[in-house]
Image 1 (cartoon, rainbow, N blue to C red):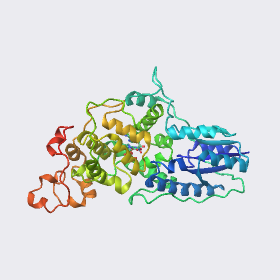
Image 2 (image 1 turned 90 degrees about the vertical axis):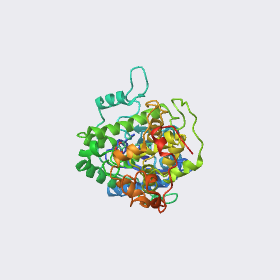
Image 3 (image 1 turned 30 degrees about the vertical axis):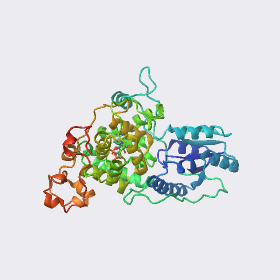
Image 4 (image 1 turned 120 degrees about the vertical axis):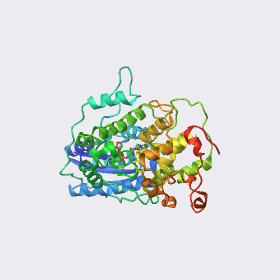
Length: 437
Ligand code: FAD
């Protein structure tokens, strides 16, 4: 009795309900397919592809240590699963349930095969759709969702298989990462790295999360987002083990919240749910300066350069840079969403678009007046300027208060700075929405 385990974004052996179920029924073919529909589109982003490649190498080693292997193919997942089923006589396929538009299409294609298809929970703590408000199909506002989420029971942790019995005769296939190099400072992918990170976090920074999470220069957050994005660690395991840190667990609920919004609104990344009074401005030069970290506003540029260098940006910096693009430059949030998508290792439609809508004030669960003054944010969250100094070496020698406001540097000194003048008049930062060329 052979079954197929189709890995997608659950690249782990611990607490993987789909893998545990597949292994329980006899011989199993674990397979990952580099999906050409993704490789041909805007989601084929080097930082994520390399992260996946490392996760596959790690997963293959774990499966080999258990007597199995990871079969790697490139093409259409349903076609490849169909081929493996024909070659091995498999009659069922197990995979993690996922509600993105692409995942739903993939599931529908699998269901057209002559196989039993089992979709297991595994990508969120609470599956999208499991919690519904009275009279609705999903929550639009976070606070009531959080209340229901904390009261909801969680699935039990799935056992880690000791043995994976692979049927003979399948060539494993090479793990070859398609596409170019990623950001130089990207964190490594894989279950081993994710579990090490989780242990270090729980025994270290987690206890100070509420105090440190907004401090830009401090490693005060878990840095688990990319591992969660590709399922190198289980969100249920993280939530269970972090129960002494409710401020941190709440962020996992935000992640689930955005997934259930995206499941209800597949057009989350394109549509505005709240009308704006003013039209967006079309300004390719300002957009390029923002993307490249040369707006002349140090706290904004520091965040954008962290993103370029690491494929990651601190959450507080994501909020500051997103507010600057949409509120100060008044450029359409979808440009920001696309740029973030092209670099973030943790980037995904639900959390990226959901957070952009939240910051731009166009989402359901949002205040249209959520605006951040970058100077006040810099004073509060980078008070000694360490974050700006780390990412903008051109001005690292400046003392406060000039570091966050280099335009105030005495003229004689300013001439020697190879850093651009501010693209938004500093006086207008206090009047959000105002913009001067
Ligand atoms: P921690 O603070 O340690 O939080 C733990 C986990 O909770 C994170 O790993 C993440 O999975 C989840 N989480 C934390 N904050 C949020 C949030 N606001 N919304 C949803 N989940 C959250 N996060 C993504 O995972 N993918 C994205 O594409 C993404 N795009 C964003 C775009 C913008 C404009 C903004 C403002 C935020 C975005 N975030 C996104 C949310 C957040 O910035 C990151 O999850 C966080 O910075 C990751 O760092 P961490 O793992 O150290 O987080």
